[in-house]
Image 1: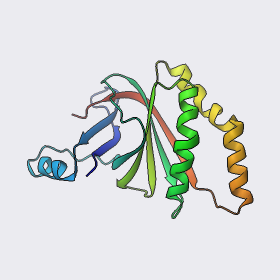
Image 2: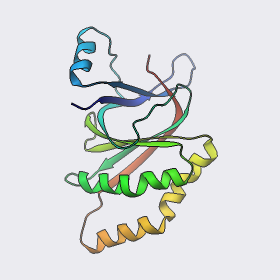
Image 3: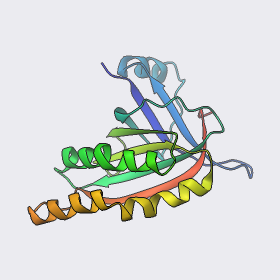
Image 4: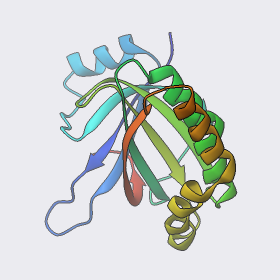
Length: 169
C-alpha cells in the first residue's frame, strides 16, 4: 500500500491568509480509521492522491510553496505523467525550486488531474518559473514531436497557487 496524501487550499478565516494544506497517512486504512474517529475535516478545495514523482515532500509550516493543479485529457494520464516528471519537474528545479513532487489525484473534482508541489526560497524565482517552462527548447521540441505524431494535448490546463504551506487545522 502506498501513502495517501490530501493536498489543497484552505481559505483563511477572520482576515487571516489561506494556506496550502498538506496532510498524509500511511495508507487508506489509516485514513479510514481517522475518518471513523471524526479526526478528518471536510475540505472542498482538495484532492486525495498518491505520490508518483519527485521527492516526497517534507514541507515545514510557513514554507513558501507553490501548488499547481494540472488538468489532463481523458486517456492521456501516462503521457502527462511522463511530461511532468521528465520535463516539468526538472525545469522547476533549474528555475530555483528547492524540492518538487508530483501527485496523481485519485479522488476529488475535475479528474483526471495531477498536483505539483514546489517549494521556493523566494517569490521572485517562483514567478520566473512559468516563462522558463514555456521557453524551454527541449520541452517545446518534445511537444512539437508529439503533435507531429498526432497526439492530442495531454495537459489541458495548469492553475498555480503560490502561498505558505501548513498542516490543516
